[in-house]
Length: 212
Image 1: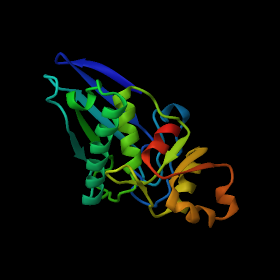
Image 2: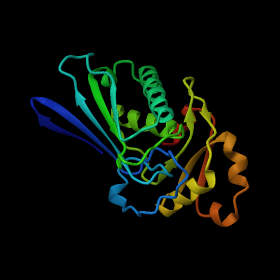
Image 3: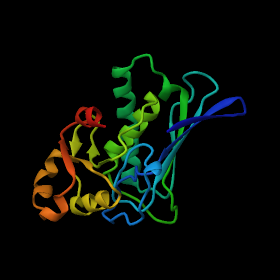
Image 4: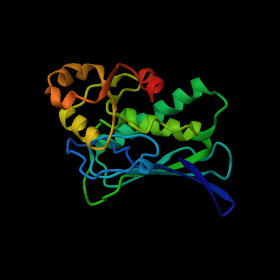
């Protein structure tokens, strides 16, 4: 859900990503969420939800960039930078006239600043969240995703598939996107864990975008 608030004559964009949880650990998510909290999309594996703040720049083209807070590790910071770069390129190809990333300054914060967070697994989730904000289109509410993203849009395998699927199911997720190279990891899970969840294996970000 994207809302605009008039402050100092500049529109402020606030995107709540209650379940875009950065996928930075294999720790199960224990706190249940209600439907109204699932505003954009669901990620799995991190202990708390994340949010984005974006403020439109005073002059067109002068506001591009993102500020990061939340005690993030170097690997996750690099993942966010890659995600931001890929989202810009993807949006330019999809909608050449869309200047959102050029005109908007974003602030990404992952709560619980005292808790270190690291890992590349948030790549596809970050890109999806940024594109949802830029296009002003929500993501499926019962969707979870994980996967490292390369600069060419390749979705790379990640660890902790068992824990992440369990966390997604605990949050009420019915659809999960996993890297294609993690197919064997999922197939090896007990049937009880694989039950009642629809899994799509993705090779590149185009596959993610079509489903999300």
